[in-house]
Length: 215
Image 1 (spheres, rainbow, N blue to C red):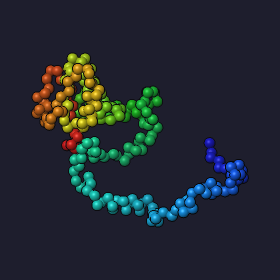
Image 2: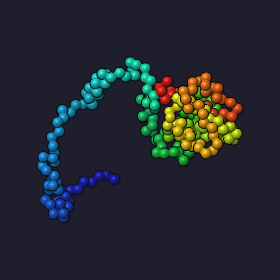
Image 3: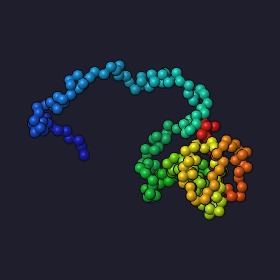
Image 4: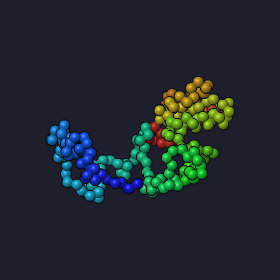
């Protein structure tokens, strides 16, 4: 509904009901020097001016436009297309939570399908998971799927030490007590060492790209 403010008469009636004359009377307990202090700030400028100033200040930093980025631990260099923010605000792609009702979440399902199709094309795998909260959950669920594919006949999981340690901890929490052997991440095993660990009892080999070290 349209916002309808209080009239001056209504304001006076409310003030009279609580025993004061003006709104300022409500703040008498606050020292006058602290009610409306003058802030030591420069005069306001336009958005264009402040954007140019901030850009100039940022040029004092080393950034991804000039140097390769090898940050790890989840702080990877990302590129987000400018069209993405607009697409996400469109009703056919936007949902507040998991799309429980497919008939009203076709956009979300389409985006998930396209993502999974692209990941399968990039990795050459038959399936790709999606709609997980974070990397740890995604990895743990991938391990679960791999175990289910073999009907738990294969019980060995090979994890690269270069996977985020918190992700590896989530995997161990998920699968503690169910007889799964998790190996490969205790030392500094490279690709050759991980390959040597693979045998007929291996259900899954997990590596990260980029990995925890930004490689």
